[in-house]
Image (cartoon, rainbow, N blue to C red; front, side, top):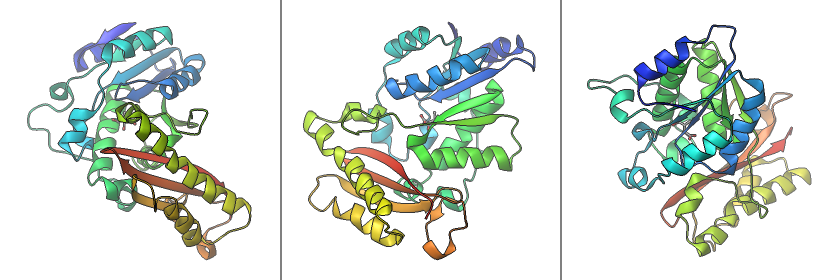
Length: 284
Ligand code: PAF
């Protein structure tokens, strides 16, 4: 496995492969866990070359305490990537990614300032800016993203479409622990009690899913059911919304076009850690 420490090393590595080579990219911020492993396991058989990026992107953290507290486990990450058959890892420094004078950023539009974007102002501009730079530098045929970050996935797919970027974005299903907690690098920052309390996110989403399956078609009622779960929880709810997953707009029963499914989203803060999760509801 090759380690590419800057843009120049990445460029030299990438130049070896002609345009008919399938290059897969899994962008990460490190602190890798089983859900990341499934992205690599999905990508590996489909690609001639499999590239990972590990970069804690300062632009997408609106809070410096959150950036500082983000887990850093590079040694273990590299061992895991090697075992997963990754060919090369791009490990840029902030200076390599954002040289002095860097000033341009991607505007995610209206859907980037709602839900997760409202809870974390500027977050998606930071995400899209780094993702576009990674796409430009790595020139992948396919990039792999997890559905746990449903809004991020939506915005990346829309950016690829809007800006005619020559790659495919592949969505990979959310991986959960046996009790339903979605794998996340941030779970490592929770205490044992916090880890148990975090189950409220999945519980609330499941209640919305069950109610939808039982025939509830008022998105505001579904949202109220999710909010109720947080009444006695130490987790502070940031948002609980039902969206049309094609437009990522707040769902509205009378205005949902045929074929547009709904998705329930939740973001909450627990023990100073921002957690998020989502579940598909289905076609209303
Ligand atoms: O999902 C993540 O880990 C990050 O947002 C990403 C896509 C690697 C961009 O920094």
